[in-house]
Image (cartoon, rainbow over all chains, first blue to last red; front, top):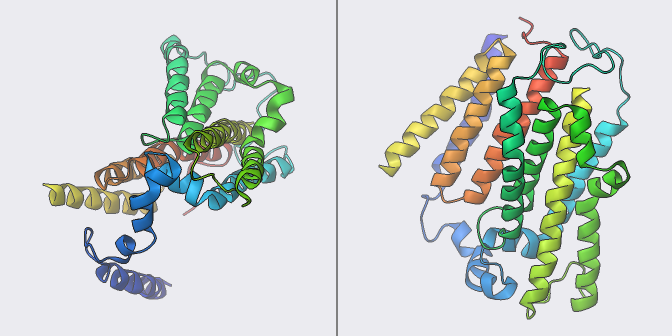
Length: 240
Length: 81
């Protein structure tokens, strides 16, 4: 078996190495990446979108259609996990925890007061940081997806340390389906608004920076909240 | 200086990748894998891609690691020989 594995590795590695060796140097001005559509983004991006962070400009504006279906993919991932039948015992060591058991580590072991205090102390600052990332995403690095991960981290930390009931109270039951679908729904809504304004599906009015910024903010907030809730739900769903 | 940084980081990446593949203790593998993501974060930042660096740190080193931890808790910690 071993010689064959080695042969397989070489077969995969050789084209990869040849490809990497033939890549243009990192800062070559005539590399394809610097002569293609990127030039237009760099030259006209700020003026056309009003976003000073060109990553956001590309993500939400020029390539908004891609991002639309990216959030649909994340939503579909959650739907798939929720659709899985819940087994009673998933293999060795995977027995269900008894009802009412503490979610953290070994049952019966109390949470360290230091850990619990730090989580309580940090949670509001993490939330502030996530909100700042959303709000400043069109100027500085950051944005909806990164903020979603931070929001999810807050949910998960609270769920692990202060108990699932405390984490569950953060997201009211009635809102959950809407929050989980927030990103695709917001994209659909913004796409419709863009269609009314410009005549193109998910079109952004190039001459109206205020409208563009508002549409971008709606998308970023929806991605942050929806993504965060989805990530946290994936975690809690796997944990139980 | 920049080349030295790149060389160190890329060596670390290869070392962590090989260690992940070789580790028999899956918990150790996950911890090393999160180190891989953190190294990758530094490489992205150094390459001038702070947006990608943030995503790598939050998703690669953070959420993925936690999900792997749960998977280990629900299955088994040792790889079958």
